[in-house]
Length: 114
Length: 113
Image 1 (tube, helix red, strand yellow):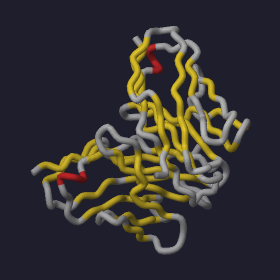
Image 2 (image 1 turned 180 degrees about the vertical axis):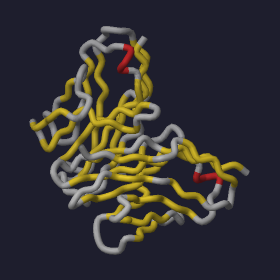
Image 3 (image 1 turned 180 degrees about the horizontal axis):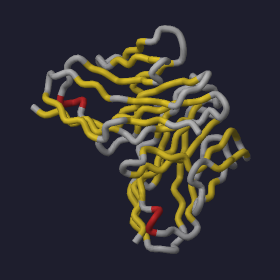
């Protein structure tokens, strides 16, 4: 089954404790992206990757890091989480960056930073 | 800067009534438009998309949206809603230069019996 998986689905952590949210897709997609969803703000892009070893900042990259060492995986790293990073996070992937290619979304990771 | 605006944050409606969820996008020579649906505790799923051609696009579960270039709108409609349509709906646009999806703020559709 074609899918995007994220782990963990739920995470409660404390300020400053490094964490990683994993994202994996099995569709051989080149393009992958991380979003955060906050009430009233919709989804905002954090980082994206056009292909292996190619990543770039989205609209809200501060406090986040990513890496793309393999095509299927695109982990999101929070080196020193803060309460304002409490949010619902989605990973997405698609073929290329062409406008007519649908983005497939993971189930989401709900992060709480206390 | 490109933007997408969903005019209603919440839309309560009774079952079997018609509904319209409004979406406006910032004008551009070339734009591709999408509606995504997010059911409770799930990720986003593509509902329908406008890429080119016919301005009226339909989904398999009875929703439709019309691309209106003069009004820069892409409103989502359904003539008769079901309880199972209760979800959050996101309008999104992709412009030529970057390809990233720009999302609206989301509209919570609540269908009551």
